[in-house]
Amino acid sequence: MTSQAFRFIHASDFRLELPVDGLSECPERLESAILDAPRVAVERLVATALKEKVDFVVLSGDLLSPRETGPWGLLFLIEQFERLASEKIAVYWAAGKNDSPDVVPAAFRFPENVRIFPVGTVEETFFVREGVPVARLLGTSWGKAGVAPRGGVESVEGADDLYTIGVFNGQLPNEALKSDAVRYWALGGSRVRETISRSPSLAVYAGSTLARNFEETGDFGATLVEVAESGRTTATPFRTSPLRWSTETLVVKSEETEEAILNEARSRLKAIQEKAIEEAAFAGRSPEGDIWLVAWRVDAEEPAFQALRYGTLAQALLRDLRADFGKTAPVVYSVDFIPTVPENAPEELFERQTILGDYLRMLRYYLENPGEKIDVEGFFSEELRDWIACERAKRALENRRRNDDEPDVAEALRVAAEAKDFRPELPTLFDLLALDSLDSTEDDGEQSDDAADGERERIRAARRRKALLEASALGVDLLSENETVASIVGGLKGAPKKNRDVLAELRNLQKNIEGKESLS
Image (cartoon, rainbow, N blue to C red; front, side, top):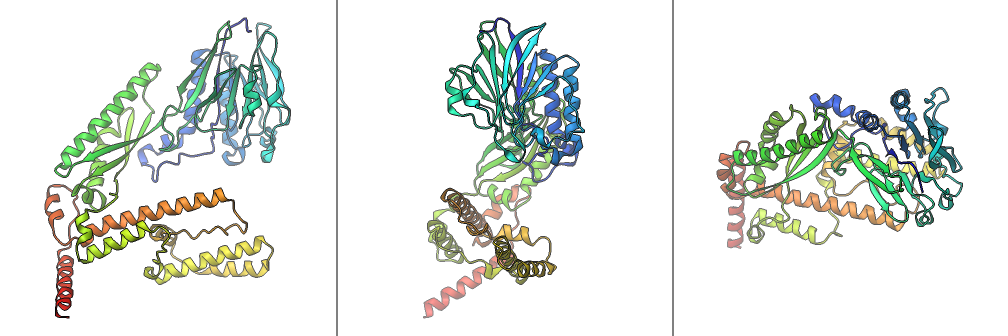
């Protein structure tokens, strides 16, 4: 049992080499802040350590990949470690697969306050205050190329009177969690913060210091650990990420106007902004530099669905919301405004003996029969079909080359296939149109396991269903036999305009068909 209280910060997974990946496009005025977000998160971590006057910092790996960041990544880390050294704050670092000591060039020297645990064995070190050992730390690092640590992490022994901290990157063996030799396990290797054990030891994955996409919601940051003289441990998470991600859902009724939709969205963003300001004040810092990214998902009835999906209403709403909340502190930036594609068109449309009715019944058949192949390549342009054929040939030849099956011939054919000058947008066009991927279970030339096959099939089924639902909604918009939708949405700015000539031709065609059927 410890006789002295102490405090430390546990952090991991800076992943300085990874950019923000939750945006399809980056707004120009926020570009610099978003690109700098990985570094800002680490700077906030260090600032908290200095402000809280902690005794030391524990880092459990995956801080960066030196090969991918280049020199700036290591130089940035050294600068942050020197800030801690100026206040005599020690750093204990157990590296993961990406930041192994083996891949750090010898030219980069870390300050003396940094202790990196060795590769291949569990090492013991002590935090000493005024000549007296206060805490015992045990740690090990991964080797280059993902060589797993050895040395019995699961069987470490405790010390008689010292609080013991285990530092490790990866999945901890169950035997280690069952022992009370280590009081706190500082774990890394997971992007999400998680407490995996509370007794007999507290085991915590610190999570990433930065939220990078809409799947990473919550307070991404680090953990402040306080150990009392009795040995009681309190772990308090705190946020370092300057980016926050939120998905907001709106329900839009058929009678709602554009102004009503805009006012509801403004009210939601105002609440988010006020919450962010309160959080910053509670943490004793300015909200300057924080960016809250919001994706709107709209359950819209007709006619608003058509206006949002195929008209310019979504762009008009985004323009107003970005103007109102995109330049203040903190920034609350609306990324997109996407209506949810309805699961079904109105049932009455399926029952009609019309082109639209035939079309919807065909789509329903494919939705209810997911194993039925949909052949859409016959409708592709000749150039797109040629590109698909070349891609399939290249993949087959790559498999042959990996299997040493006529590698010279395969390489020559691959180069020949690439020589054709296709338009650069064809791959994107294929992604938009295709219901099935070019990939197959034989892509890698090896038999894949059942789990991988199942996951691929799940993804294909989800893509197929999404495309069919989108086709249904688009068909209702293009093949509607009356102008009810167009007349109702007249009050909505950006509503899609019906092509009346096309509608007239469709009606005439339908009448001709019905006339011929009656004569026969």
